[in-house]
Amino acid sequence: MRIPSGCSKIDKSDIVDKVKGLIFGAIIGDSLGLATEGMTKNQVNDTYGNGPIQFGIEEDEGVPFLRDNYRASFDENDFGGDTEQQLLVLQSIIQTGSFNYKEYAKCLQNYSENGLQGLDKKPLGISKTSQNVVAHPEFQSNPRKAAVEVWQATNKLRGASGALVRAALLGVPKFWDGTTVIENTTDCCRITHPDPRCIISCVIISTLVARILRGQDLEHEENEINNTRAATTIVTLPPTPTDIVNGSSSAKVTGGSSSQEQRLVNNTVTPPSSSPTPTPPTSRNYLETDATLMKIVCGVIETNKRILTAPNTDPLFMTPETDLEQTQSYYQQLVDTCSSFTDGPIDFGFLQLDSMILDEDNAAATATTTPKGHGPFKCLSAGLYSFTRHLPASQETEHFKHVLMDLVLEGGEADTNATVAGALMGVRLGYSRLPSEWVVGLKRWEWLEDLVDEFCGLL
Image (cartoon, rainbow, N blue to C red; front, side):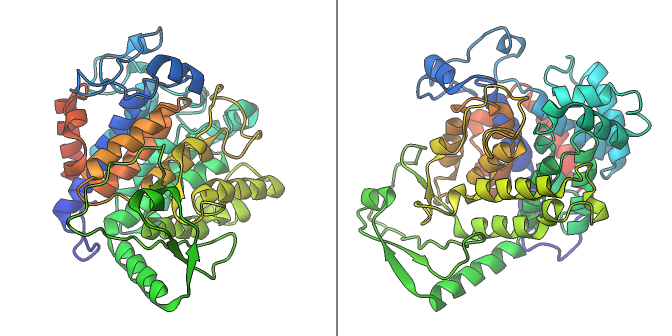
């Protein structure tokens, strides 16, 4: 896992900062998400109103956590099963120096019985899918076979998204080697969640992390976007809500892109130094899309679409789903989900968070009702939306808090959605730009800090 010279445009100290940001961003998301996990939007409104929810060491700010029967089992600012799943991967890598899915399967088996090593508590949040797979009589000898048989027998668990919380961390080991990143990711996913929607979602997440850590991909995309801006025709569009707030009467985008793989480029106007500092946005007033990150997301989806469009043609992407028509429909769902913030009437760079994340009254429901209503694509879209928000300089920390809080206030699978979103925003910002009042306020913060530093020592 040692980072070789020349594999990234980013200094090693910044890489370590981003890795720590990924891990702690995910933990914050999980811990905050416990406040509304399993709640409908109406229940969230009745309990927390418009928020914010009290969290970290901000004891005098926000609405206190609801202490119902479920949440009473967690301490203040504690983390749940999604964090424990991530830390289990981390501990497995520390033990072996790299990721090995068989070693991880052993750790998962032990965790299901005894809890996480180093914590004096039983596992409180292991998912129903993982419970069924680990309980399979052949799990220890052949975890992949066990997962497939559970997937085939339990239709209601086919769209479960629990594997996605492990995916971001798997973009770290050998992030400079794309094949290894994908192999580790699919191996980890397939021992509990062999559904092709889970596999492609995990691959998208881990690949994005690896590209951020490599750095040169960001530089390439920024240069390409700048060249595109200079070479294409400028089209004047009607004013948007953000334009009106900023006093602008028009927005500009480049033309000439295809309908399904449109690459939207937004001109960001930098206000003069005398301009007042804008108020950090919430979901009520739209957030601008970062054109560079959005183009990277679209490229990652395009590169890996064969998981769904040509299933079982690549040994890395083997899946028990053999219905080509079904996998093609999954691909269309993926495209539809991700185009929520690239296409349509708000195609010029702004998206309202509230309209994207839907209620999920039954987390175990099948993913056949609506593309975004259930399953891993809903969780993925929450993460990608958060990841691609344009964060103005010097306001990143406040934006992190606002976006994550707004996501959690949607309820549903809030802990899982916020874990993925927190990880992707965290790797962008780095540990040094996460809100210190939330990080330090985490339950077992010092223990977490030591464990994460031990992991980063392998880099």
